[in-house]
Length: 346
Image (cartoon, rainbow, N blue to C red):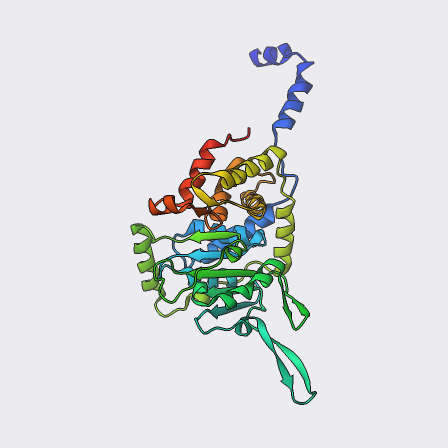
């Protein structure tokens, strides 16, 4: 009886309004990201069969893939940089090539060269190893400047021009480059113009104690089984193109765009920096933040997505002033300072 009286005492004029408020509160994505999310989880699960820890590293690789970007991976030897890159490529049903950069490597060894066909007396272009979908360049800073410069066009425009003829790359195309920050003998520093063509610079650290124990366990259990044999492809090129298109459609409000622009603009006038971020850096932050939102099942970008993107996007594009570099300051310290000084949009 009491329940019936309570129901009868409810103002009938308020009920439709309450219902409409509940409908407004119920959130549904305007873009269907369920398949993308599921595929990303499958990809992570495949890599987890071999790779212990390194969740942030793997997530940044996925974000870069969805953002049409290239990745520079920096870390000491023996922490699975190359293995992770190779396994990541295998989770995609695409072509894969590995190029070991050495001091005597020539541009033609990477791009390809024209060869005389004795039967037809014509020159034919023989494609180099760069002509693939996923290209792993091991120890990119081992090759001289002219070989590194050969990558400028192909990384930015996804094409190679030889003897005046343009050879486009088949999509998807992504470069994964590794470098060792410790041993500098026999290495060549990458020029700023080349660094700017990498969407992310990912720093890979040593595993934690627990992760190292798990690494030993997995190697003991795996015995002679090769890592590449344990991972299966999970995403097709067609799916990948669809996922990239959906990622580009992720909504980003004007106030969030202003947040990105303010942060990057401040890098150009900061007293601790000799060189700030370019408009290409702003675009990279925007594209990466869209991908972060998409893999988390959201069709809109939040300030947290921007913060996740800033460090890997900016750390290799900024140059410290000589005084601050001598004091041991890092570009990450400056990015953190700028983040603290910019108001987060609400």
